[in-house]
Image (cartoon, rainbow, N blue to C red; front, side):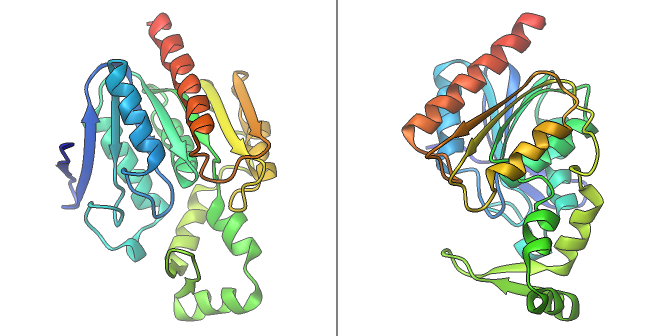
Length: 252
């Protein structure tokens, strides 16, 4: 049985995490909106790390999984803070950030905040600016009015209703990236499904144009969905991680 560890933040919150010791650079898993560290991709990478003596850490954001907090109180600022807390206190040396969906946005923000630590990014269906571009801009007037006046809207979902708060939307506006160049110079690998209903491939492609890095590879998987959790998808992800971690090790 895996050991779930706990890290206490300065604000008194608890981040639950699992770590696999091994060679650096460390791979840090940043999950998606409402996901936890026990998703199929995170578990797959954990197994890969164990089998290949690779340092890997995965964790639950505030209000997610086993970490403390109420999901409805979460914001991009809070979740970015969790990511930086993990990078700063639970890893050493260079890191590769592996971000899925919302985690892709947080990985980009963390890379900009910690340029001396983050050497490469592996992004799966990166949902940069999703609170604005994929939520607010696509909501109809009734939904926008409800969020503005009531402070939240219960979004229908196959997994139960999700509370979308005005605070989430307004806080997200502080972290928008796609309206200007993104000054990350490290290697970036993006895996994107063409059939993704949540993050359209065209949205992820906009990110490529904004990245200053010249080492960017965008892989469009024609029959891929948002999850990209099939065996073939996971093998692609493994190949990306092997490439990025090996290249950084060589440079060291």
